[in-house]
Length: 243
Image (cartoon, rainbow, N blue to C red; front, side, top):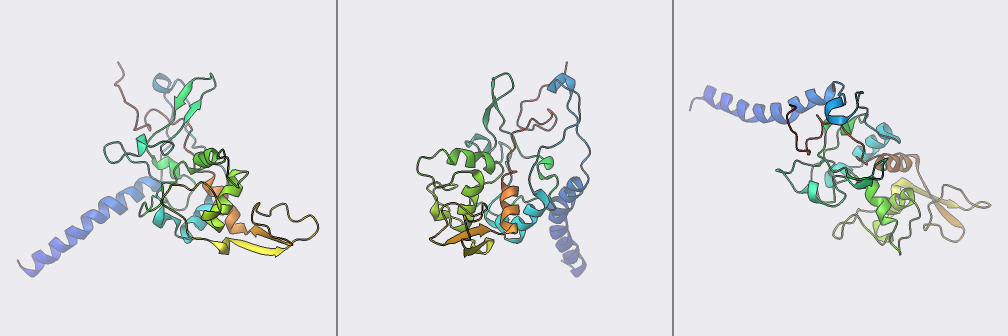
């Protein structure tokens, strides 16, 4: 093999994966064209607007800066590539629609799931559980009889401060490293601060979340994909050609 052939082969071996894994997805995510519901398949004709709430942009930046994406993914893969669609509450939920009919919202991830985020946190490794629908799972954790959290926010604050303080973790084998830098301890003045984290207060002392902690928790509570997506985006649904 000549030196020229070696350089060409080396360039192709690195260039093609970079093109397919980095450049093409970046181009598709950078400018998403509007997607519309279809009257024939969806029963309505309007533009699809992803439903997100909370401090998404700021919280997403805090999520990335603290390396949460290293241990957690936010990606529900297709059925042929993984088992996420069959795992309870990972890909979606059983909910009641406006008519009281039970609907399974489980679906694969779409590019629109990352709207308003400065970076799509697909994740590096799944050391901890996927967080695509973590907000909905926390609501179920609050039903545990021995849980110390009284709200989704307090559950997440306890998890960030020290995950061992709860009676229910995201799974049975994973515990987040403590993140005390997200909190500040101060003396209790008068009746205390309404923002103090329940279960962390000591005699004469209380623990408050920092603005970064509030942004991160707000962002995590926005991670719930139970809104209806257009038929054309629901890759998990068996599609039939229109007659």
